Structures are given as structure tokens and as C-alpha cells.
Image (cartoon, rainbow, N blue to C red):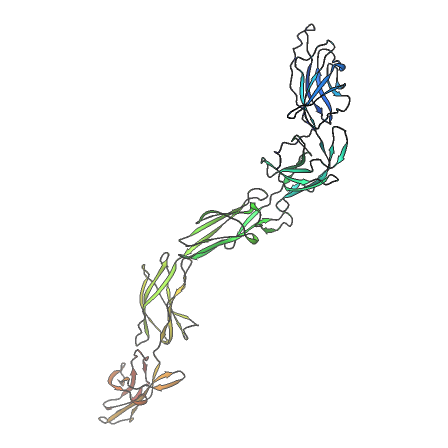
Length: 543
């Protein structure tokens, strides 16, 4: 398993200092003891010991002695180092470094103490103490990133370079890293905890490691003492893309009691093509948060950036709000879809009685099986074949309860009838069943009153034939009652004189006593099977 991550060091080894405070310089007669601080390995080469010392008189170089004790369990080998030179500052206040590379028997961490004397022969009240990390040191060169700007379509960076191993015992640098692996460390967002991805170091010291990064990145290697040394951090800028929600129907309708599915596509503005593009289903940042009558739910996108939700039962007008993005590489985008509920209209025709004169009773009710009561007129429609060519021949207006009852006259009382409600923005359209007008059209043909003229008191004979339409032909109808009517010359109305029953072939004959001049005709009254008809008039003069 990986060791716990320790923040990267720009220094080869940690320099640990333990302050030792000497007496203040009250006056020239007061004795000031030397103070040793910042004991540790040379920041540029852990093969050398380095420390800082101050005193009221010059430090005696020949008096400097350092003891390094290996920090291990069991026996702790001790190495004594002498021979130091002043590398900066003065002999009273300066930095000293071992003249020769230390020869420590084992790589590791060494607890170190330093003793010395100044020109007055004074020694420190407390020995200088510190730690030397005498370990192989990774040395990074040719470090590079393939990009320093990431976006939704390019969320990773690839770090490349070479790492070599510096040995503090010999001062030699060789290709490769003894730890065999380096790690790329990045952050997913500003302020977030870092994470790391490892990559093997090749024999020549080269490495390549790819990781998603949103803020900063560096590559590091772990030393034997769990200290880390790496490249300088590189700030990675992040570009965010606009997003949007496109509903398939921004405003839809559905029927009360039915179901409705709201759906759409989540899109982002591609930083590469500058076109609106469906969001990918696999990215964890592309969930759609849908708020509506079903509550608040997060949906993973399907192929093509699709999402949907079904409302099982429509109970009224409602709406949905969908949101996406707002973090990582995506700006927030949202949209709203609305649903208007339609009443489920029903139309019932309870009475469609026909009269002999071709009138039909239109009685029924307009209501709703679900939702509020529909409003508006119902239409009486007629068709020749009951399937096509429906024509509105009358309208009826329901009352406040949806009921209607009226009589409507048909100019052509044949074919088929139905009631139709066209619906509106709040209710669905609906129709009743079809009613077939089965009564046949009739006619009275060959009507004749003779002789003409006729002497008063003599017999007048009336004849004719009642026929029904049968497709394109006419057929005589027997057993039907025909009324013989007479209108006196100069009169305005006809009077029924007698009724005759048609015989074979629909023929009828009836005799009268001639009394005065006038016009004779025959009339047939409609029944449930036949429509009414009237013959032409025949004028007969009486002498």
C-alpha cells in the first residue's frame, strides 16, 4: 500500500533547528556562550553536514566535532565527523560545512549533535542538535505537462520527465530512481484534498503519468524516510462550459387520470467546436436534478444526454424544473417544462327520436370522466356512409350541468348521424356512437283524378302508386296508408277526404262523388320505416 502522503519538499532534506538562547550581551565583560542552530544535511547535498553558529568571539574551527547516530532499533552506530570550514558569514556568526563528504556506513536518518568552542574556550550550554536525512535523493529534470488548461473535454493532464538518483555517500547521480515509482499529485478543485496517481520509472529514468487535475499538479518521489521530493507545483487553470436543458416539450398537455412523460436532453457548449453537444452519460458531474410532482430526483443521463420521468396519474396542471452542472467543468443550466391537464370529455346521446317530418330529438349530456366539466357546444353531424364526410347540421348548447335537449330538423333525413364535441384548450374532443337513419325515401307517382271534367254527382276515381327508393331504383310499397286530399278551387288549404291502403305494387284506387271544382292529391305520412311524401296535384272541373 502507498505510504501516507507528506507535503512536497523543495529541499533535499529537512533541516531541523532547535533554538538555543544564550545570555544577552549586557556589556563587554559578560561571558557569552556559543549557540549552535540549524543542524542538518547541506540542502544541496546531504553528504555534507551543515550548521549555523554564533558567539561573542570567533569559533575555533578545530574544535568542531559532530556525532551522527543512526536512528534504528537495536545498536545505533555512531559516526564522528570533524573538519569544518566556514562557508558564509563570519567566524562569530556564520554557517559551517563539513570539509569532506561524510562517510556514513548506512543510508538512513541520523540524529546529530554538534559541539565546538570559541576563541575564549567557551562551549555551548546546549549542544547543537538536528537530523540528517542521509538518503538517496530523486533529482527531476525535463519536467513538462501536456497542458496547463483543462476543460470538460480535456480533464486530465499528462506529466512527463526524467528522474535520477543522487547518492549522498558518493555524490554520484545515476539515471532512474531507486524507489522505482513516482507519483503525480493534483487537486480536483480549489481547497480540496490532494490525490495521487503512481507511475513506474523506466530504466533511463523517464516517466509518464496521467491524472485528472483541476487546480494544481506536481510529480514527486518518496525517499526512504518517507519524505517527498518533487517538481515545483504548476497551477492548472480550469475552463467551465455553459450548459442547458432542452425539453422535448416545454409546454405539453395530458388528460386527467392519464400518464405523462417529461423528457429532454442535457447539453453543454463544446469548448472545441463551440456547438451545443449532448452531455456524456459516464461523467459523474452530468446528473440532471429534476424537481416536479414526483418530488426531487437526480437522474443519470442516458445515451445522447437523454433523461425522462413519468407522472403516473395526471391530477391537474403542474410543472418540472430540470438543472444540470454548476460545478467542476460545467456552469449551471436549467429550464422549466409545464403540463396543462385536459378534462376527459364524454358525450352521451340519450334520445334521438325521429318524427315523420324529418326532425330528430337531440337529448344527452356533455360531461367528463375525469377533470372539470367541459364547456362549449356539441355538434349534430351527418354523413352519407357513417365513416367520412361528416358535416355539422346543427349545434346544441349544454346547460350548467352539461345537459341538452332540443329538436333539430334535417333537410335530408337520410344516412347517418352522430354528436361531436370538438374540445378546447381545457377538454378533449369526443363523439357519440353513430345512428343510422334506416327510413327509406318515398314518392307517390302516377297520381290521377278522372274523368276530367266530370259532371256533378257523377263518380270521380283517384289512382296512384306509393314507391320507396331502393338504391338507384324505386319499388312499390303495399299495405301503407295514403290520404286523399282535396282543395276547393280558390281555397288555400287541403282537406283529407279519405284514406286508402296500398295494394300490390303500391297501387291504390278510390272513388268519390264529384261535387265542385278543385285540386286533388295524395299524401303519405312518415313511419318508422318510411319517410313522408306528397304527390303532385290534379285539378278536376265539375260541370
